[in-house]
Length: 425
Image 1 (cartoon, rainbow, N blue to C red):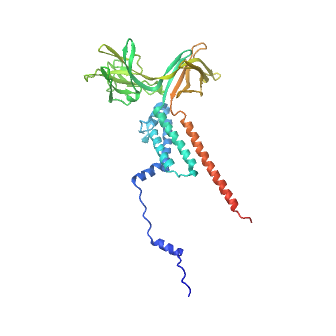
Image 2: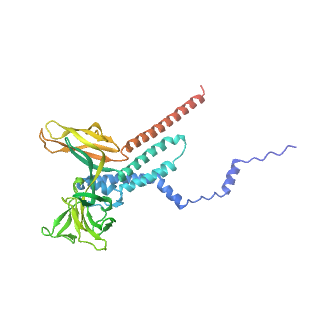
Image 3: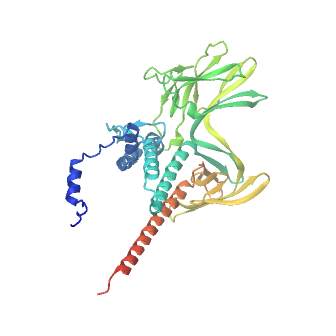
């Protein structure tokens, strides 16, 4: 008697069994998981890159009429969230997220998708390195936005300076005058007052002085106008027979002169008459109180350098038959703690020292004669992320090289295996 054959499961039986078995239910993702998928997805990255391209295009067109700095401030400043583009002075009804926040979302997308969600393993190391390089570049842009400073320093031949003047920021300086000199000085920074537009005020406290100060009605570019010369065209605030009127924005934003209204707040809570503070004023506003004299002035912010710069010699070369400079060079002496160092600053060759970069920006006076004393104007930049874009490019290039090398090794290994397994005819 033959033993019964062993039980054999046929593929058809498996198919039948599988077809009768209901599939496992798919687990739905939670709301945080869905949000993570959207923010880290390739679709989000594509939309953000297209939006950055659109913003750059609109900004390029708008800066022709409005100037570079106002356009950059509108399109890429962190305080600007949404904006409406303009083309030849006409508003485009297309609300857009500002470039700063588009960049912030792109940074988040790269961190979530390019670092956390990306496939892990040595074969994907190059992609990870490249993503980290781009992330580093975006972080550098944010650091520059929040912490960089730009100004200029004009120095005549044979003269020295250790102070730069900010290009754009206007501050209010309040000081007490003692022995015909400024004693204690309180500086109210520009970012504490530049949002105080018409109808908005803010009080600034001076506990050791017999008064406080209220500031409001800030204008980026304005001039005081006498009521006797021209009547107000709408209900502007008036101060001692003057009011502030907007001036057309300058293409060169450094030429803008900010202005605002201010008034004294006495210790009993009463307020004095309003007065005008203007960057174009030649003299500060004076306050006499309790036999003490105080001054209030508005001017561009000054920031001291950690060393003194002396201009020894300035030379300029021009293209033949023109007044267009081909090269201008400043030979300087950097004086610090009693020691001196000779440095040359020229076009495309700045001086980098102590976290500061000095560029050769311009010179003067215009049309100077052969024996006339010259002065040199340096653009001074303090930017903690000055070299970060360069470093990020090195990181991205390294990542691409690693990816190429891994692909090459895989290809050579696959070719070697194929040759070993090939059978001769």
